Length: 308
Figure (cartoon, rainbow, N blue to C red):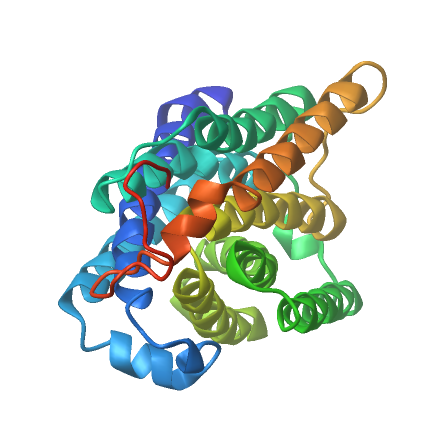
């Protein structure tokens, strides 16, 4: 695809998707946080949320976001589109703080911006370039899907022994892995659609995409239900592009720049992402917000100065 099309269509569409995902995430987390802990990782959670108008508005915005994401993927490589969507973070965490009538402190701003800037830095240094989705063989696909399943199981197993924001982050790690793989499946489906609807319907990736979308939705809502937005959306937004870029380069032959100093800058960006996530998950204000669920009294008395 020409560079002009990437700049004129793929980049704005990716950023629009990020903005829609941000508002959608805030609405969904507000609704999911009001559900009891026993519904986490259960289809009962989705059944109850499906009756909540606020949550349904969030889903509608998420669908719109996927439309923008699909448009971006039609004109730009997966390795460019997915990390750009992380702009969601810049909107989502402050919006969440506003909704809960709390104020972001320096630590929370640092964590949020560190994740967003770190991913942007890694993307800018790696300079991803497009590949060929049709080049991926069945064996490679099975390897990717198996690795994703293993990562999801490991994250959920660790999450069972954690509490508070850390538990939400562990579930969010599983959700991010699924959604990163889902983005790759979406890219493959969009590529099939170039040859017509029947071509897409004949591909097994289209149906795995549906399964991954439902599984990812359940994991995301469970992460939202288990803790504050900043503990989940930052991990999802960090994991999803890393998985998408890794799989995109492995399956589709997408390429990223390497060598000194490019690799060092990329690693520094990823370290910045990790520091931001740890900063948010260890924030006392984040922990306090976990007890400040909509429709409930704060679990620990809940002060009003805080975070997101």
